[in-house]
Image 1 (cartoon, helix red, strand yellow):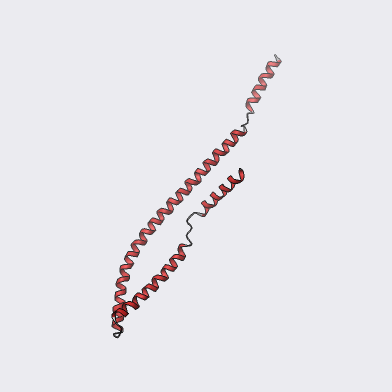
Image 2: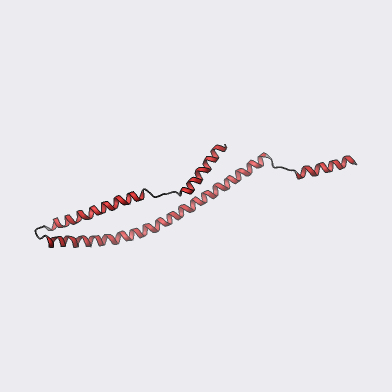
Length: 144
């Protein structure tokens, strides 16, 4: 009887100390990495959608503002040209329109210059998301 008691106690101790195999551990790590990657892609996709929504709203407002401003600038240009003809009667009509047009073109060029400078500072990818993706890629390449 003592041998059967030893067999029972040996079986019960081996069942309680079951440790996962290396394959199971690697499989768990791979599954966790896949989940992490999917979460990062979901976050990135959400950020891109939010940026697109904001850009669409901004572009719509900008387009409406530009259209109204163009009508105003046209009327203002006509007014300035006629005012210039009244103030300088020896100036021909085409010279008045040319002077006013040149002034508006200079102002437009300055606006375009500053708009281009400002657009170069736009961060198209969230720096936090980019850092996370780079960190994940670095970790994946070094773990191979």
